[in-house]
Length: 254
Image (cartoon, rainbow, N blue to C red):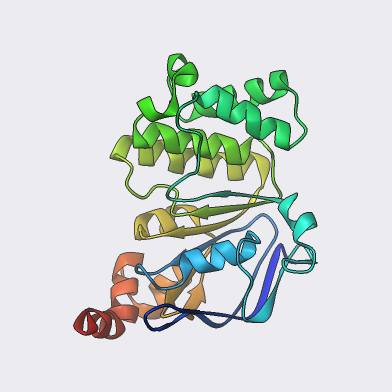
């Protein structure tokens, strides 16, 4: 059974104008795979993650996580997943520990188990334990994101949805998060869907990569396969080669 199976997913938003966020997207993610989705802002990456995390209902198509329909069986799906977004939601006036303890209770974990697990993860991420008891609003963006990573990983989900988890981080924090994801995959075998703007990050972490433009998957392959197919030395150059014309059209329209 695939970890994720999407068939013909489509989603349109209507505000001042009609925006097609996803356009008949179909793909699968194998168990214990890191599947990357790369694309510019507005290409549909976050919409896809929000559908898989049961926060949005698709207009058309179906999505399954370990065989469970994300719309009809959302309760079961939520128990199998966790999510990190570029702007993690926290109670900013209380400490990292209080936020994580609250999250642990939602998953039925006692305080001791939560504390041991989260401190282990935060130590791996290079988080200073002395800051664990400070209000989150006093912590840097990078430190807050490390707390978000700990909150997602300590529940040992079957599927992790990482929506641009390193965007806006300083180089040291970004490397800490990337190394932790890579080590965790090697040791624990999570299944991960990762969206990112960072082609080097995708090349380093992902087993397969999909390039998405205007809500459509343009190409999907292993990083090495993409480099060979397009005869390029890096995923960044593959991305520019595949998206160049369409990217210019978007810029011209704006």
